[in-house]
Image (cartoon, rainbow over all chains, first blue to last red; front, side):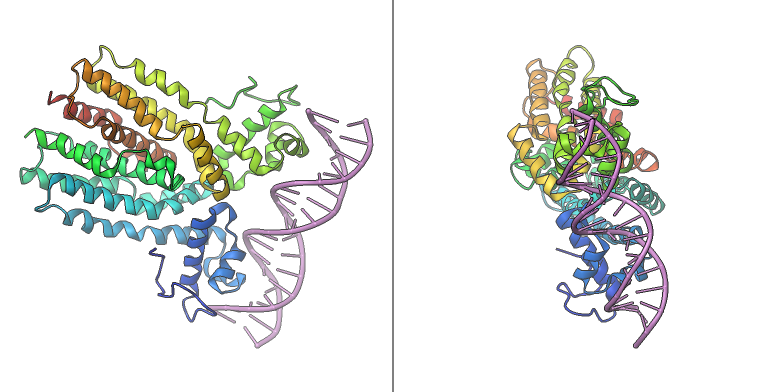
Length: 213
Length: 213
DNA sequence: GTCTATAGGTTGATAGAC
DNA sequence: GTCTATCAACCTATAGAC
C-alpha cells in the first residue's frame, strides 16, 4: 500500500527502535485512510504506533504539526511521476500511451486523495497546507507541465497535431483521471463504475489528437 | 450564496419563528464552509442558529443525523444543471457552447464541494451518503449522461463529429471543470491560477471535436 | 417545540520521573 | 527520548420544566 515507510516495519510490534517518528506518521496515515480525519486522535495514533501519547507531542509539538507532517510525507510520491509519464512515449500506440499516463495520474490521486480530503475538513489546516504547496511549487499545475512536455515530445516526433493547445489538452486528461479517482474514493462500488473507463477515454483522446496533423 | 434556504431568512436574528429546523441546517452549512467539518460542533450550530443545543437533537436526533440532513439538503441543486446545460446549445460557437457548459459544471461543483468534503471526513457518513446517491441515481455519471445528450444533439445537427465516443468525451470536459473547481476550493490563489483557463480548454475541445465530420 | 442544566465521556496537551 | 499520570477544556447527548 506504500505507506510512509521511512522505516521498513509495515507491521510495528512493541517499541519501534529508533523510528518512532516514522511509526507515528505511518499510524496517522493509516487512521486517516480508515476513519477520516474527524476521528483521528493523538491517543489512537500513539496506540497504533506503539508509543506513548506524549511521544507524539515530543516529535510533532502539537496535532496540527503531526497532520502537516503526514501530508507532506504523502507528497513525495509526486516527484516519482515525472519518470513514469515521460518514459511512456516510444513505440506503443497513442491510445496506450495516454492510458499509461492516465493510469499513473490515477494511482497518484488514489494515494494522495485520502490525505487531501483530510486537509479539507479543517480550514486552518487547509490554508497552511496550500501555502506549503505553493512554496514547493507542487500544485496540480505540475501535472499540467509534465504532460505539456510529453505532448511536446509527441508533437516533435509527428505523433500528434502541433496546432493544439497542449496545456488545456493536459487538463482534459488529468481532469478525467482525477474525477475517476475521486469518484472511486467516494464509493468503491456502483457510483464510480458508471463513469467511462480510462481505456475508452484514452482511446477517444488519441483519436481526437491524432486525426489532424 | 444559495444557502439551504427553506426559510428565507439569510440573516437570522433572534428566535427563528417556526423555521428552527431550516435555521439549524443553514447554520451548520455555514460553519462547514467556514471552518471545515472538523470544527463544527452541535453547540456552535445551535448558537449560530439562535436556538438551544437541545433543539438540534430534538430535530435531528444526533449529530450524524444533522450532517446527513445538511448534505442531502445541499445536493438538490443538481437538477438545475439539466436546464442550464441543455439550453446553451443553439446558435453560438462551439467553443462558446462548451465554455457555457463547463461554467455550469464548475459552479455546480463550487457549491457541492464544501458539502462533499464534509462527507469525506467521516467514513460512516461517506458510506451512508454514497448509498443514497446510488439510490437516487445522482452520481457523477448523471453529468456524463446529460452531456451525452447534448453531444448527441450537436452531432445530429452536424456541429460535431459523429464518430467519437460521446461519454468519454463528456468525462474529459467534466473532469477538467471538476479539477479546476477542486483546485480553486483548495486554494483560492496562486494554486488554481496556474491551471489552464476554462476558456482555453473549451476552445481546444471545440477544435478537436469540430475538425472531423 | 423550546428551553436550562448537567451528566458522562473524550480530547489535546503538560509535568515530571527515568 | 520515552514513559505514566493527570488536567482543564470541550463535546455529544439527555432530563425535565415550561
